[in-house]
Length: 211
Image (tube, rainbow, N blue to C red; front, side, top):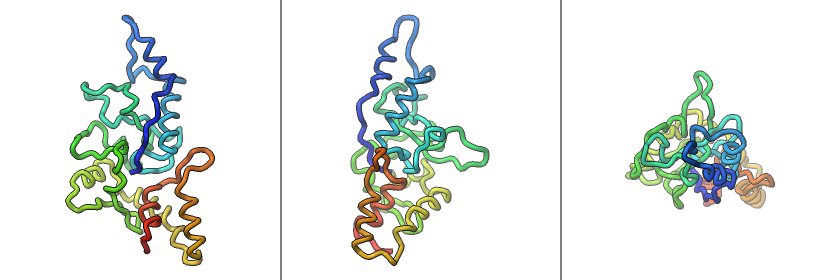
């Protein structure tokens, strides 16, 4: 889970909400078209086009607007941009493993669910060279529950993280080549995209870890 710094609310959303009147109220259910597309693009851009939870590469056709605090809970504003993220998976294909926003669903526990909007969230998770994820501290119930509720430890994501790790285990790279490789990987590209599984690679290879 990578820390996300929110940008400002897209002007398209601000203008659309300002049209509220006695006969029409803006809701997330009637958010659509170019306004919804602008919101989703803004979310993807500020996240560097990686999933807010698992850090898979976000594709527009296979992702959705996620409410960190579930919109179906009446006390939360479903149009609060500061509560919106972009999560991987849109309509799940038959048999596809559910994870991230779709697995979390309406579950929310303010004391247990770790938010990618909290600075320091990255430091609560550790990654192994085989792609597994676990809590840094054994007594961190929040990290354990977050991994469980978001499915961050399912076989699919473990395998994807392991695949991302493999190129960094090339023993033929010199120390200088390896350092350049890691430093080059851990930055946004010209399109503003972070690499998939950014914090996995950062945790394992930018802190002097060895396989």
